[in-house]
Length: 322
Ligand SMILES: [Zn+2]
Image 1 (cartoon, helix red, strand yellow):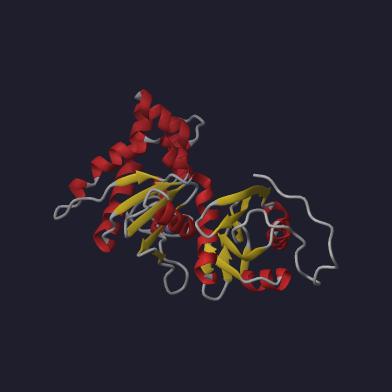
Image 2 (cartoon, rainbow, N blue to C red):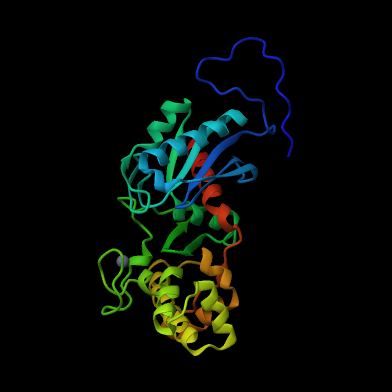
């Protein structure tokens, strides 16, 4: 990718408008995906092609106001690189996309941040807000592992567990921006306490952080979820027991999702999906016994990696702009 040098300006640009030359001939949006540690950002065409990408620290320790300012600053920087049509932003937590307001995010510490309005005020461009995982779901369903399938369920397993149902190319946000919280589906009523206050949520058993914690507690040794996956392959009995409990919990939750939504494909992303066949093989094997009257849909690994959220933020913006 090359960036053409700026020609000598014929006059001063309009106040408040970015100074930039086209990066590529096609129109672009600036897309940002805000995570707990990094803001993944880029310039994305209407077909989802990423023409430029960059990463910035989220800087959670500096407090919510500094994080909000960092997001606005990254968006501003992108809009100066190229003339963009609008902004797509994805954030975690409870997200009211219709109102453009990030209602709440536990790990980022904010409440009721009107991101769409703040971005439009700062940049003079239309801005579209979405939920990070549901944005990822949209990207994987349209352009990734679910491409060509009309109904796709995307499950992201990392520090937390969340998902998104995409039907006819549209992701379901729910009435209050809380659809897809499969991580808080209770699969073990007397199970371990979840961060939400309930007991036996899927996330309290099968998230990468809880798999690692369960192994550390039982084996009395350190290890990440990736370490546990490796130990499963090595035949470590404690790792195998912890892993089997997580697989069973995931299979129970996915069986519920399959019965309720009838997806044509399930796509699994997030850090735990990197365990590959150690995750996918037993999960695929566990579903038929839970689905007595129907076949389970195929379960595929996500293909867009950690760019899915950014690409999905762009697709959401394009859906509004076009
Ligand atoms: Zn919970």
